[in-house]
Image 1: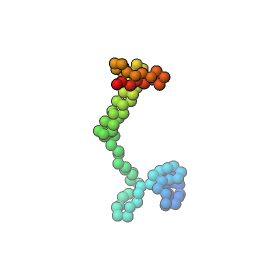
Image 2: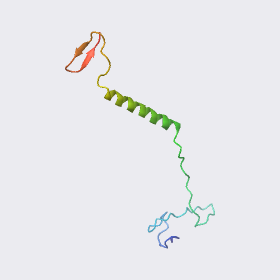
Image 3: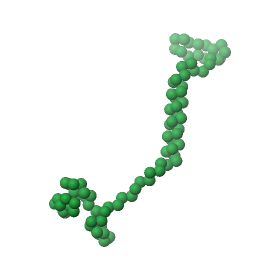
Image 4: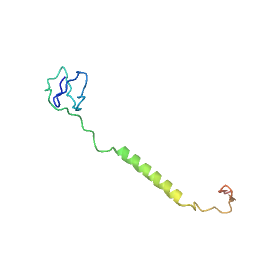
Length: 94
């Protein structure tokens, strides 16, 4: 097979030119297409899905809640008369 772009001679098993990377059009036996016609590929949709949007929103909310929780060192107020363990930093209310 001869590349129409650069003229490189190569075996027919390749789908593109090994020298200039020109992509050869597909040759199908039941369609009569011209050998020099450009190959068209479907264009993927650029619009993201609604579930991806809500997934990203949930991750953003969880991340911001975690950062807010880490930023507030005082935590929740202690209940009335709790058992407080200062060594391990926890308390239990009865």
